[in-house]
Length: 479
Ligand SMILES: Nc1nc2c(ncn2[C@@H]2O[C@H](COP(=O)(O)OP(=O)(O)OP(=O)(O)O)[C@@H](O)[C@H]2O)c(=O)[nH]1
Image 1 (cartoon, rainbow, N blue to C red):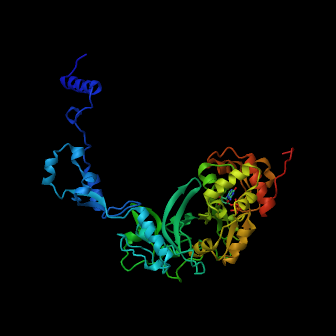
Image 2: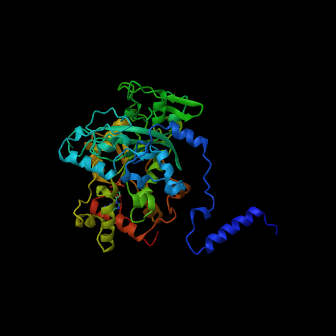
Image 3: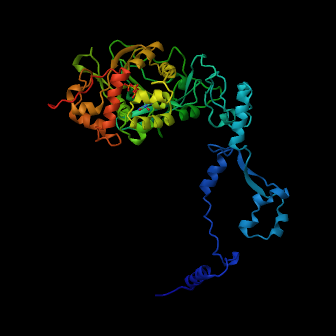
């Protein structure tokens, strides 16, 4: 084997390092290897303006602190091996620092202001970002964090103020069931980012047929947000028409009440199909089979994406599926994930989902539907919809919000459908084929596993204790 002299030197240095009786001095260390600077990265960083991260802003190079008591915290000579005598040559060496106060201090400030009841007086000048909202709503309590997000968050302290929502951004999401548009909403009631998953593939048609139903679009997204907004601003937030591509970028026209679509108003075309879905981290993300939430979300998008037959048309004409899932961040029926996890432990002790909530001091269901109603109105979806749900409270709450419900479409749990096909609902526009049924589970985590003891118990409790409108599945040896 041929050894190069540089290899031999490196080996010898390594051996010295490993066998030295005293800790190595700086001289014996191998030379420091710095990664080459990437010019593209530097250009991007330089162009990005004030240095902003999720929790910090205004990170930048500033003259270093020179007070002796602060020396230790920025004494670069410890790391570079420079002689400390050279320090005086760089008394004002630039240091990379943040001008932002520690988070604890910022929250302390916000709390103090909250306590004093002067929520609108909270200084927002620390923020390098300009809030983009143009809804006239009291500003949020975490005022010091406003600039990083610019949420339209009023406060629960004034729950009587009319609920307002604003779609902050929209984008195309290709789902296993077809394309959808994800809309992110802010509101003046809570600090949550509620979502709408809009299915309306006809929006991609360059030449829509004259009798096509109006598109499902957000009025707040399409409205003009400021005198200075550019076409690129509109496109970036999703206020465009058609399908966005490198060769097609058409900003939507500004919203005026007279031009806004009112889907669902035509007599011939079935009303859009919608679902108000409540967040369930365990069911949707982990694939928990304590509940059917994951499959309900998937199944709702699938059903909404199915072509819809136009009954009055000759030759059984169909139009692309259209509707929306309004995804409300009301985890655990509004009690939050922490309480839901505790409730699961009580359920393991033998209590059902309703009793477990009550034992923890919660109501059986703490959800509200005002924000969902406002989102439906913003999307022009309050003038007649078909609603996917088994929950009678949800139907009543939406009607109270002024949403006209033309039909309730039941959601039969897969586990019950699979064991008893007679439960499958064949009364609507689609007659599910076997392959449709298989497809329905294919996109779920663990889609093949449809039955579970916990799941069965949960579903039965919904029927028996919460009044959900489902035919109760009963053991039938014939099936
Ligand atoms: N507190 C609590 N919440 C649960 C439990 N299992 C699921 N959830 C939550 O329940 C919500 C879904 O509500 P469900 O009662 O299953 O159904 P629904 O939305 O009222 O009615 P449908 O429209 O028919 O689906 C989600 O927010 C889940 O996080 C549980 O055991 N305890």
